[in-house]
Image 1 (cartoon, rainbow, N blue to C red):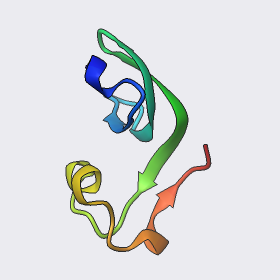
Image 2 (cartoon, one colour; image 1 turned 120 degrees about the vertical axis):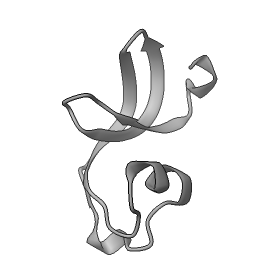
Image 3 (spheres, rainbow, N blue to C red; image 1 turned 180 degrees about the vertical axis):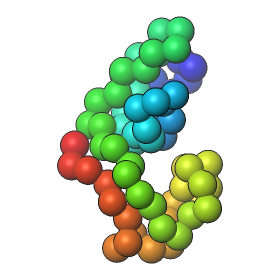
Image 4 (cartoon, helix red, strand yellow; image 1 turned 30 degrees about the horizontal axis):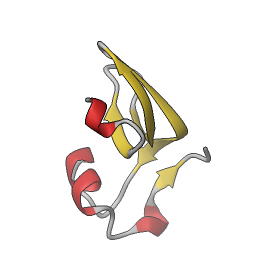
Length: 67
């Protein structure tokens, strides 16, 4: 996971939800993100995997929090 440090990533927590941010560090099952946003809802992508790979085709219909 060190190769992702300093890069923007999408992380899915067990119970916390889906987040987008810059990975600061990764230790075991914990990730620390900077400039983090919660991804509440996305349209234009079938899953969080497609969202990470292709982005969204309908950004106006998405619900992403502020950083």
